[in-house]
Image 1 (cartoon, rainbow, N blue to C red):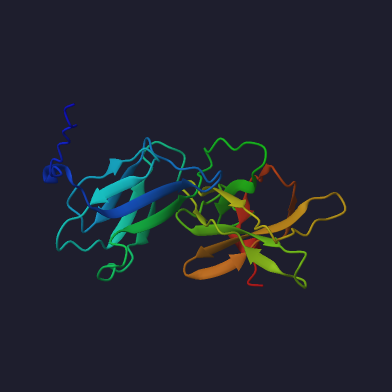
Image 2 (spheres, rainbow, N blue to C red):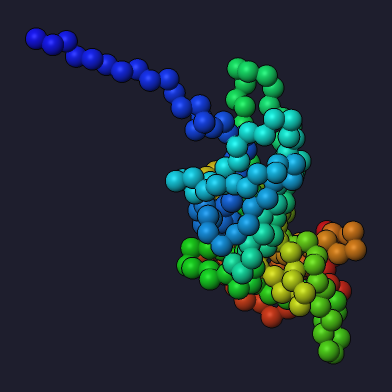
Length: 229
């Protein structure tokens, strides 16, 4: 009987690849990966990314290259652009030789919110009585909410900050952690307020009551009605 013959060929080195950088672009509303319709760049890396089967953007190793910043351009999708600093290069082996960076993309007012998302959509203007209204564009803005597990006033920052667009329009949402309980009124509405930074100063809108699981449309928020407490 002829003995089986096993050929052990050397690995094809031309196709060996070593990862250097992985970016996860996340929809901040539903937590899902975004893989189509966006452009992801890593400053300091010359190569283009490939999208793996899991929907992550992957760069291969480039000897001597040091990534400095990750940026995501949502193109025509209803998200705000985002950028974060790249982490420091990994240490020598046996440390993992690649980085995984998670970038959350905040929604714009055009985002198709579904039931289950809690937030506010509106316009930030300079003054309530001014006609015509003067929008405050490109200001950082986010939602604050009250936690029933903390003593009053217990205002907490929502983890997803946003930005007003050229017309002052914005959308801000809140996500509660597993151990967080929103303070509500007798009708079960959450107590929230909008926080914004304009001209280097952070101020807060009057309190609003909104239904959990829905995005409330508020016509406008006037900066001259905001306070610093």
